[in-house]
Image (cartoon, rainbow, N blue to C red):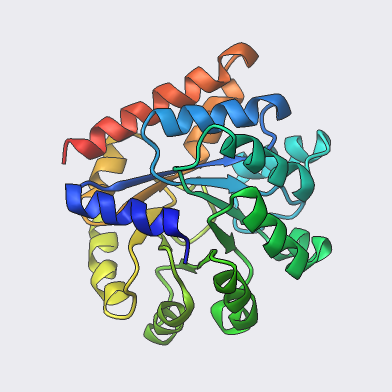
Length: 267
């Protein structure tokens, strides 16, 4: 288990606050801006940061994050560069947890054992592989845990009690509940259905539950934060970074996340 992730959620629980988990794609919109963006997110109140590993076929992601991955790949960003960003971030920040989020192919191409060892050495705290279902990820999860990294899994509105229980057995750090059917960036967030699902998840899962997909602003973040342990926000942040002038990318990240942080702290 990652000490940084566990300590973060313990501190927030003691403070009766909710975790804010922003997502950005490594190398997007500009490769030389990623580390500054990560620091800006932490400075603005991010509790955990999910750093997306670019992949050519991100099947769970909508057009916003797909295009971000395409831009990053066009800049030559691969796993080695992603881990380089983590190492650079850790030169100044030894506190904020970083989770790599992506797909199996880049990890397997890099080599699983090599990936886990290098991720740990770089300062990664958790790994979420979108296309690793829990029943096929037992060995991978065990390898992560043996290196002090958290295997983080997705749950969805369609998840059965059996699937939730399986995730509960092997997940650590937190679980990520996908609040909508479909891909990232979709709309129509139904906070009542989220609130109804969380007790089912918590019956089987002992780690904190983060909720993402469809959260785009302070109002929706606050509504989800009222029932979840953490709020995950990605597509809207990626859009804001894409639209910002090159010299203002980090400031744009800081401003948006500070607004979400303030909304969650008003609960």
